[in-house]
Length: 64
Image (cartoon, rainbow, N blue to C red; front, side, top):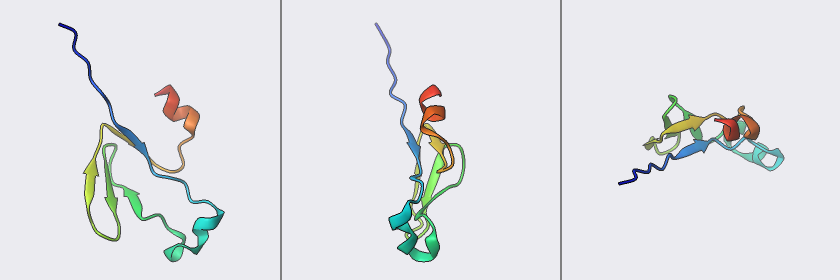
């Protein structure tokens, strides 16, 4: 039998020019660990196989 695994990886979206109108120019999402993010407004936390911050390039994520 062949085993397969789906990995779920997320990157917190970098803020763009239109996002500058956001509260204090900050993302709603915050990376808490290599596997977790938290919503700063609702305090909900989510866990994934890997979490990247907004400063990581798409190329780096692809290479991982």
